Amino acid sequence: MTTTAHIDTFAKDRLPTKETWPEFIFGDDVPEYPDVLNAAEVLLKNGFSDRPAIRMGEILWTYDDLDRKSNNVAEALTKLYGLIPGNRVLLRGNNTPMLAALWYGVLKAGGVVVTTMTMLRQKELNAIIGVSEPEIIIIENDLPIDLVKSTIGKADHVITFSDIKEKCEKLSGHFDAVQTASDDVALLAFTSGTTGLPKATVHFHRDILAMADSFAKYILKLTPNDVVCGSPPLAFTFGLGGLLVFPARAGASVVYFDGGGPEVLLNQIEHHKVTTLFTAPTAYKVLTGMTKTRDISSLKTCVSAGENLPLAVSDDFFHETGIRLIDGIGATEMIHVFISASGDDIKPGSTGKVVPGYLADIWDEDGNSLPDGEAGRLVVKGPTGCRYLNGDRQESYVENGWNVTGDIFKRDEEGYFWFVARGDDIIISAGYNIAAPEVEQAILTHKAVEECAVIGIPDDERGMIVKGFIVLRNDIKPSDHLTNDIQNYVKASVAPYKYPRAIEYIDALPKSPTGKLLRKDLKN
Image 1: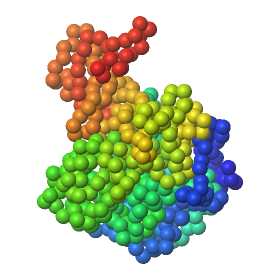
Image 2 (image 1 turned 180 degrees about the vertical axis):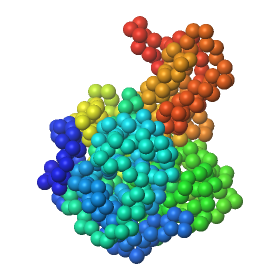
Image 3 (image 1 turned 90 degrees about the horizontal axis):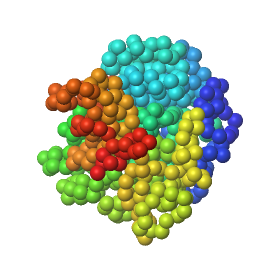
């Protein structure tokens, strides 16, 4: 590790031991980065100063505007809130120009950014705060005021977007970015594990550029004339790359909007002449059938990630629009996509080939390479890789220098990778990763529930949905009213997308002689 610019070494001190890291590969496709590197400075000093950077409604910021506003943020954080390099700053807001300015500003100030989804409940947010220990928390004003109040005291400073925006307007707009090392920690990205407990993946300044210099450069091939839009939040590394980092690296512009369904997304495409779209397979399925009466002629690239892309969805969208969806598999641990294909290289139904800069293989349970056509564990390595904060599960994700993704794939003789199944208890529904045990814990606290188990079941609209098998307490009878009550109860305690959309009441859960839940028996 090169000499750090971080005074607060919290994140560095909690990196897993070096011998448990994956092997990192740099070469002709993705060259090594300079020892001194601030990713925010590089992305905003991109030579496209007067070109559009962010659009939202009637708002239009150029790269000069974004550079200046993020300088104001960095100046406010350091001068008014005492941020020192290495401090963590937790951001909680929707995709807006202000969230982008905050993200860049934290990095310019040498901070470590922790971006969280707005739909998380306080209990989930508290868990992330407990792991990352932020010095500063910045919350969007549109979020419930009780959420802001309940967060006070959990960091040295808890402030709203309007608080810092007001202070930024009085500042100079000049700030010399902290000259961080390329392997200084830039962000903590949280992923759901099979335990439901939050795990923070650690990514360096160089990792932020590497995801753009691999997937975006070789697969997306963005230009300064591209206009990017999509649905994933910046708290997802899928959204962070597609809707912040990739456009900046290419000098393209990005469109943010206030949320809403497919009609709203189509409105953005029409109004802003969007060329590149990022969303989940579920959304593409809904959009199919709606595009015939809309002007989407500007669209040329549509990226699908977050869950497996069914061939039928890809084919239906292609037949209606003439655009073949770009599929891809990535991981929060890897920061972004490492297998994909575009244009004539797309083989419908497959996820794609290894993105330049990466290597991938298929292993059996003993770590032996399997021949083409045989299904096994997907492993990968390249310029990015897994480093869990505090070393949580590090040795189970990294084996012999390779990142073990937890997915089951097979590779054909042409080098295309085909998805077979998930290798753990994560349920992927409409692009969201949902940990079955976390939902179970939420259900179990309902007063009517004695025991429960949660699995994912196939669903035409969302790919999979959460289904709960529930054993009720004595003398309590199943009813539609009780089902609705349990569902609403879960929605109030965890993010709403995690609630069980299907519930089945059973007399007893299937268990082994030792009392272990046999989740697989519920899937039959």
